[in-house]
Length: 113
Length: 108
Image 1 (cartoon, rainbow over the protein chains, first blue to last red):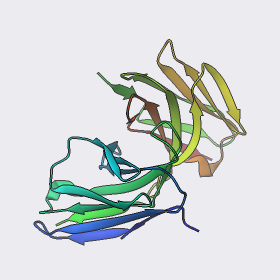
Image 2 (cartoon, rainbow over the protein chains, first blue to last red):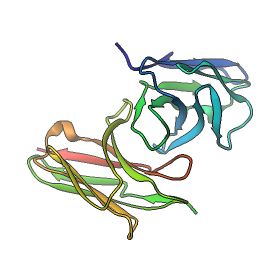
Image 3 (cartoon, rainbow over the protein chains, first blue to last red):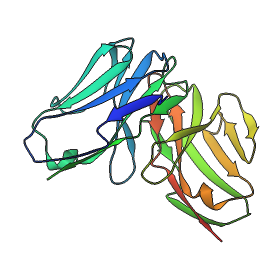
Image 4 (cartoon, rainbow over the protein chains, first blue to last red):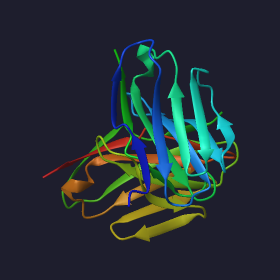
């Protein structure tokens, strides 16, 4: 029944490791997003995909690589994790584009130690 | 440049009314969203204004003035469960520009 689900909810890992966060939506939406919310609570867009195609790629390190195998999935892979990557990462989807209501996943709290 | 401003924190009393303001500057403007985010949870949609004026939805109303780059969220009959952060987001040409959120504290 969950509309947008992402796993894992918590992720604690050491610096230098590679990790992935998975996201799936069952709403039939065309657009999916990855957001980063830091300790100051700013929500920053990282990537946006529309029908499996990348449409927004904000200035994020290329250690972050999104992968969209189909329009219902948008996974985030992070190489060589750094302390500054610690944040909450939210996956979201919207029916058409960023000017339609976004539905968010529960978030993944990433802690790099 | 693109920018969204909203107060960092507000305090109100249970049963009262509170107005959370948001000013924005974006490259192109399509509409203004308000989202609610409880601590440790994901943001959830509250409202979307495209045209000038007030949109009412139960205890919550949202106002937009496109000419002034200004919006507010009005919460009536405050309940303790309304304690949360309220995020303003402006739809630009390609993406949403988000504010940092206003943390609303409700006191009994």
